[in-house]
Length: 192
Image 1 (cartoon, rainbow, N blue to C red):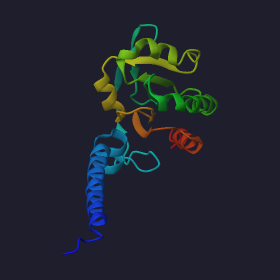
Image 2: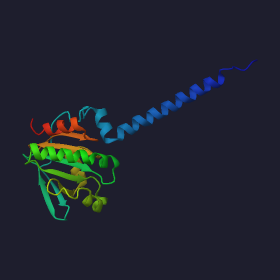
Image 3: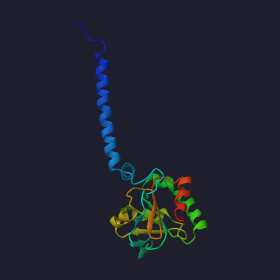
Image 4: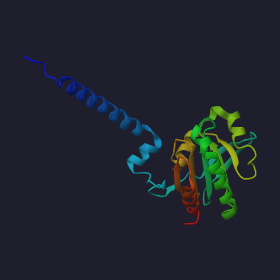
C-alpha cells in the first residue's frame, strides 16, 4: 500500500483549524472580559461611543484633590466632563494632547462646565499629581475616595475614558483615543 502523498497537508490543515478555533475561543473570551469590548458586544455602547440610554449618575463623589484636600464633586443637576486615566497607560499618554484640545474647546464653548481628571489607579498618586501639572486652571485633578463608586458612576473600567455628564445624567462615555470627530461629538452632548 502506498502512503498518501497529501497526508501531511491534511494533518497540517486539521492542526491549523484546531489552532484557529482555540485562538478565536480565547479572543472572544478576552473580548467578553475587556470592559470596552464587552460593553460594545453587549450593545451598551454604540460604535460612536454613546451609551444607548442616558444613565442617572451618583449625586456626588467624594474626592481628594491633588493637594490632599478632601472634597466632594456634586453632579445633581450639573454638567461636567470627566477624564479617566492611568499615568502608566500608554494609550492615555497618546490621548493626552487630544484631551488638551478638548479642554481648549470646552473653555471656548462651555466655560462654566468643570473638567475633572480622575485616575482609575490609586497606587500611582505621585505620578498622577505630575500627569496634569500646569493645567490646574483648566482641569481639576482629584482622586476618588472610593474607586468602586467612581466606576459605578461613570460606567467604565478602562482607560482612557471620557465621560460627559449633563444635568446630572451621564449622556456620553467613550473609551479610547479621542479624535477630532469624537471630541466634537462629546462636546455637542453638553448642548442636547
